Structures are given as C-alpha cells and as structure tokens.
Image (cartoon, rainbow over all chains, first blue to last red; front, side):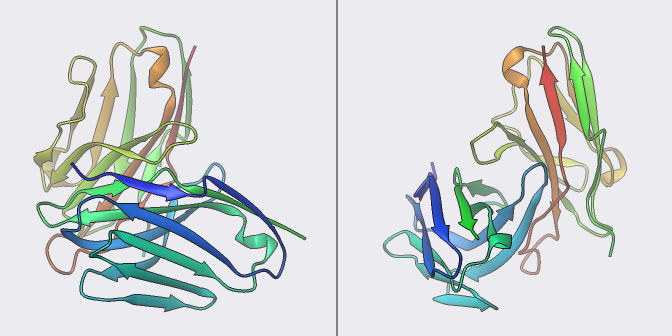
Length: 112
Length: 115
C-alpha cells in the first residue's frame, strides 16, 4: 500500500528566502507525482506535475524534482513571498489504477 | 473552462442526522473522486468513479456512506447517520481518463461539522 509523507509539517520563513519542501513515497511504481497548493477554506490547486520518466518540472519560481528510485520529490520555492503562504501537498498516482495518494502537507508561512 | 462545482459549501448537522453533498465535474471528465480531508491531514480517497461505474470504494465506510454517479456526470455523496468523526471537508475532484488524464482538478469542498 502506497504511503506518502512530507517534512517538515510546518515551516515559517522571512520573505525573500529560498526554501525546499520534501515528499517521500514508499512504492516507486508511480505513474506521476503532483504538487498542490491549498489555501485556508479552499480546495486544492495543482502547481506542478512530474511524469515518472521526468526528473523535474519548473513553473515560475517553483521547481519540483523527482527521484523515483529513492521515492523522493522536492519542491523548491525561490524568493518566497507572503502570498506563498499556504499548505503544500504532494500526491502520487500509481501504475495500477487512477487513484491519487496524498501526503499530509507542509504548512508554509512567509513573513513580511 | 468551468471548474468542479460542489454544494453546499458548509453544513452543520447533529449526530445521527443525514446529509448529502453534490458534485458537478468538469465537462468531459470521465473520472470523478470523492475525498475526505480531516483538519491537518491530506485528503483520503472515499470513492472513485469511471463514468458511472465504481473503480475503488475500498475506504468508503459503507455502513453509513453511499455515493452514486447517475448518467456518468453529477455525483452525490450521502452520510446517514452522521457521527462526530465525520466532521471534515468533502472534496470532489475530476480528471480525464487514460494517458491524457494526468491532472486532477478539485472543487472548493463541502465543509461538514457534526455536533
């Protein structure tokens, strides 16, 4: 059974810092991995999608990497801003079906 | 493109009462998911539909939860009778099927408080 963990659980940084969020999964037989953002009281918004054959994806100040063999992904946020404050979740989609398994999320606070 | 629509957004009920949530996925999306998200945790899959057939309902508490997706479009999730531990956000999501169906799109959720 696939399990996804994320560290740290919470992170508070001053504005302008570069930061890294970590995601680990137990079964490397994944179809893809997706990073989401969740604002308080809102649903999840997709940020980046990495196919199992890819090593990284970039969108603006965000860069996500994937090391499938070691069961790890990182989300790098450059030059953080207060508007980046949210919970960031990673989810893996397995090869056996269409299900997404989510991690518990990292709650990020960027202080002005 | 219209997103995933859910209603109601908020619901407060007493334990042992019943509640129903409605979801309208993105047009053309064959796969529909219902997730339960308890505060401070990631979403947990309750049920997954492919068109109007059930793909995975292994984590659905079938003694009190039921879901249907008639005609392969809208879906309803029902809880009867509700327990205190059912207090959570119920997220509906949809995606295309097959190779192109990579990204999953979420609605804003239905917030349930059971008192």
